[in-house]
Picture 1: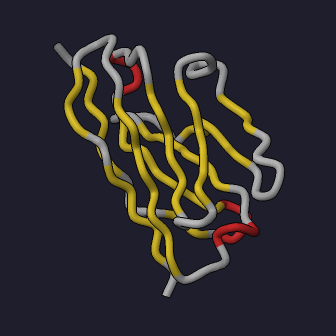
Picture 2: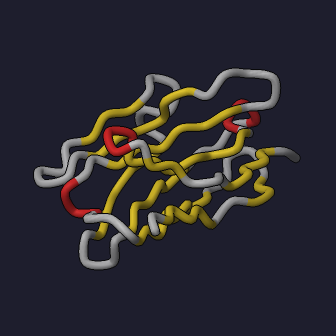
Picture 3: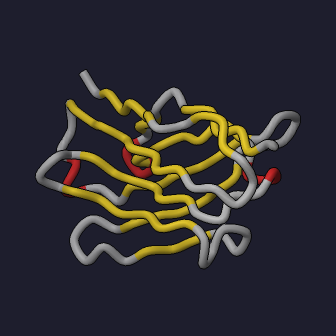
Length: 114
């Protein structure tokens, strides 16, 4: 049974940091690129970041470039998203995914507010 479980979300003040984790099981994590997406209230889901499987090449949305860092630990079957200098417009439900396989987590809420 494939599972992707996000954690680490919560309430943070503008300028603060959070680290999201995505613990996976039930598939060969090391062979898939992993991505983070987000969906803000009333908006469509949007791409945030991606990391490839073997060479760990990363890609970011322009809106988070320089502030967010995606990483992965293939030994732990876990992906991460380090988020720094958070802004109110980063408020959203963040989803972990292996999109090429069609695997998605259920999301974790990040609320950036003073």
